[in-house]
Amino acid sequence: MKKLFVTVAATALVGMASSAMAEECGTVTVAEMNWASAGAIAHIDKIILENGYGCNVELVTGDTMPTFTSMNEKGEPDMAPELWINAVREPLDKAVAEGSLIIGGEILNEGGVEGFWVPTAIAEEHDIFTVAAAKERPDLFKGAEDDSKGGFFTCPTGWNCRITTGNLFRANGFDEAGFELVDPGSAAGLDGSLARANERGEGWLGYYWAPTAILGKYDMTLLDFEVEHDKDEWDKCTVVEDCPNPKPNSWVKSEVFTVVTEEFAKKAGPTMDYVKGRTWDNRTAGKVLAWMTDNQATNEDGAYYFLENFEDVWTQWVSPEVAEKVKASL
Figure 1: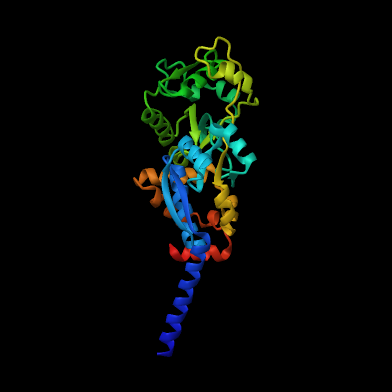
Figure 2 (figure 1 turned 45 degrees about the vertical axis):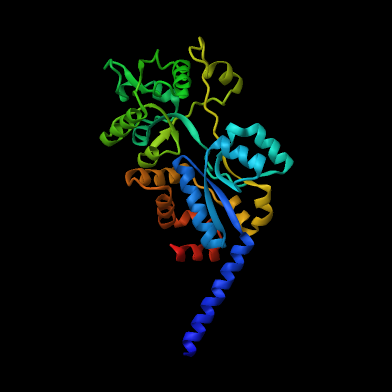
């Protein structure tokens, strides 16, 4: 009987402590954006904030512009875990200066990246790590209708990157070096060409971006353009269809941060340290996305897969005490 009383009392104390933490943290609304990496991180936040910090987390459907506008004008939701801030830079800078919005950690510490990629095995075997080096080896990159030429896989018709890729293809002299642009026809066609080349150990050269599921599944190397991003050239020519004289240029990194409201930052306490400190690289995010794709998994499934398989990553975001609580909840 004494042991039972002690156990019940201890359980009650834990429950009281959890209730106190939840009351202190309160209800937190988190935007679950409609792309996989952002959806997964929203569920990761929900699991960690609820089980590690005692918050009550409500996920709300979001997208870049509607979520930012609502946070800026209405103070809702409390947090956007993965906001690609290049799209909202000017109004975000103004909101931060006024103190209504607070920038947390850089959730994608490499940013969102675009560019020209080749399989890492091909890059290492033939010392191809730059755009210039790839241009010299059309024999390694098949896929063109003309077998005597190298294939360069561009974006499907209708994608904005098709214009940019075409201009940079010409600006870097790929047409004169014996390459031909290959239209994959669709997103599935682009992915299929990349997957097929990797499965066969063959060369592949073309446009892609990260983090994505397919770059989490296949080891690809982003080629160095060896030039800095020139915004003036980018705006007046690189992104302009049929620009007559494009010059070499490079994509600018898309900065991806967590953004929270002023109200949340005031009440957050130790949870704000978590929001500022958590971050993952594109390879880790890509591996989670690849697992989600292969298993037709939900964002919540992806969150649990990450927490169970990448403990070395997420335990760096929290204190040992919080980490133990989250592990126990899993």
